[in-house]
Length: 299
Image (cartoon, rainbow, N blue to C red):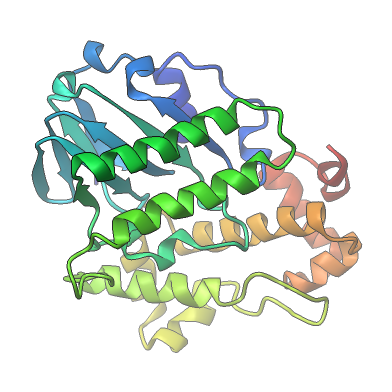
């Protein structure tokens, strides 16, 4: 299985300032110009999985590696990478410009779920060749994200999320008819997509009368008509993560959103997330965030 890069390694490899509390944010986002990250000094980008989502706007020829494919980029392209599929580049030194942005799976919160879109699904259409006019449209959207990211505007991330969605829809409108859903998935990928959809159906939590009930592989397997061991193997093969890791990450993401965006007590949040006792939730949260829930709420 290809090595999986973390988002911290992305910053270190590019000698970028590493944002403090990177894993404690309510979703991480950043955008870069290709000219600013030394593309000419490194003519290739390793073929491997990353633990973040990546959207790249490329101007100029290059070779894009995605899953088992090698795709020639001729002039302009939008490329969508997800944590489930390894990717990389060859001949990056021939690329004349562009942007790329990175974001964590929880950046959208309840606004959208990246796994619902074909461009971020295994087997989906990931690379879109652009005309000069389409490339100019994409340039404008990336330029706006770049500007907003460096502004002091209080609600800049709301605007950036909207711009990201606009870029995603710009690409999906270019998808061949009938390719708006993932195609040619392997059996493991189909099981994983079904698992992720079931997991996501429990969120967002809108009231204290809701409770997360599906919290382990053993809960999901009967619903997907597979043995729990089969589910675990499929998820690990497709994502590089265990079923438990993915469930934990999603519950932790929702915990952060509820702590920051609702007036609910820690006990209420503990209950809706499926913990039998607030103390169990506190221990869970401290283990993964290094803060207590209350401290995280006011940091």
